[in-house]
Amino acid sequence: MSISGWMGLAVAVSLAVLPARAAGKVKVLIVDGQNNHNYRAMTPFMKAQLEKTGRFAVDVSTSPPQKSPSSSWDSWRPAFGQYDVVMSNYNGEPWPEPVQKAFLKYVWEGGGAVIVHAANNAFPGWTEYDRMIGLGWRPAQYSDRVFLDDEGRLVRLPPGRDVGAGHGAQHEFQIRVRMPGHPVTKDMPLKWMHAKDELYHGQRGPAESFNLLATAYSDPKAGGTGKHEPMAWWVPYGKGKVFTTVMGHVSGESIPGIECVGFVTVMNRACEWVATGAVTIPVPADFPTETEVRLVPKR
Ligand code: ZN
Image (cartoon, rainbow, N blue to C red; front, side, top):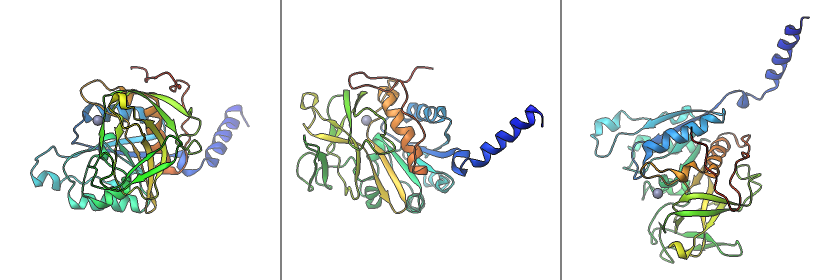
């Protein structure tokens, strides 16, 4: 056999042993269209970061704008079932009932969902969405509050106790990994600096089967609560998984919250993990350190 013949055989053998999942790309659908944040800047940037890993094929479904006639909504039916991950960058008017039902069915039957920043502000009063996301941007009376105390113990307060959803002044802050063995946070430094962002506090929800991966100390000097607030977590919903990061504020053209290598790594790995149950995307060499913020290089 010629050299090229041998090489062809070697390639054929190595392809044959690849698991079917790894051979194909993970299919991601980003949903946007209404948001009190600059989703027009966010979505293309996040899509590019996902695609840069080589692991994902990404489509975008953009809803009708605010105050659209029902005829526009009638023709918006994202094909959730054709994707492995639905990433929500949506915070706006309620989806039409068929879209809500299709989304619940998709996750319940095993689909993955990733909720970015203000997407957890969406849909107050939609009970199943609250269950899926665990915690959302809701007023104090709405539901339970969950945070960690200084010893790292989970504290749960009933509706009305302590503050509702809010944030202090934007600043750079340290993320603390609370579940270092989880595939999304594995190999990350236990403490790393996140770029300038809003530090959400007082999130409220049922937080059933709540898996808290990372927190940040909400400093009263920056208008915070003095508690360790949840920054990234996941919740099972039926056979599916729903991962939330409240990092990722973008308004105007300044986008450090999503340019942070830490944010990008969490997003990329969360998408892979909710889809496949495993993570192959490494923590990059330029990951933030305990004291230093790192942004992805400009193109
Ligand atoms: Zn924000």
